[in-house]
Image (cartoon, rainbow, N blue to C red; front, side):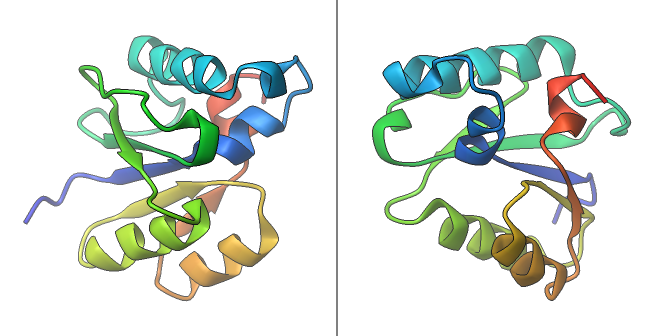
Length: 123
C-alpha cells in the first residue's frame, strides 16, 4: 500500500468554477485541466503525491498522462470520489472540490478538502 498522498480532483467542480466557456467543450476543458496539472503539479502538495482527476459525463474519454491518472466515474463523480477516498484509507487523501455535500462525505472518511483555487493557481 502506498503512503504517498493521494490528491483527488473533482474535475467538473474545478472546471465549472471559472466561467470561461467550458460548457461548450467539457472534454476539452478536462484535458486542459489534466495537462496543466501534469505540467504544474498542485501548489503546496508534497513531491511524490499521486494526482487523480475524476471525470464524468461528457468529459469521459480523457486519458491519463504521466503525472495525472484519470478516473472515469461510471455514474456520479461525487460517488466515485467517495469510493476512491474510502479505498485509499491509510494514506493521506486530499479532495479538491467546492461541493459542500461532497466535502462533508469525504471529511467523514478522514480526507482533507481544498477548494478549486488550490489547483487553479489563483490563490
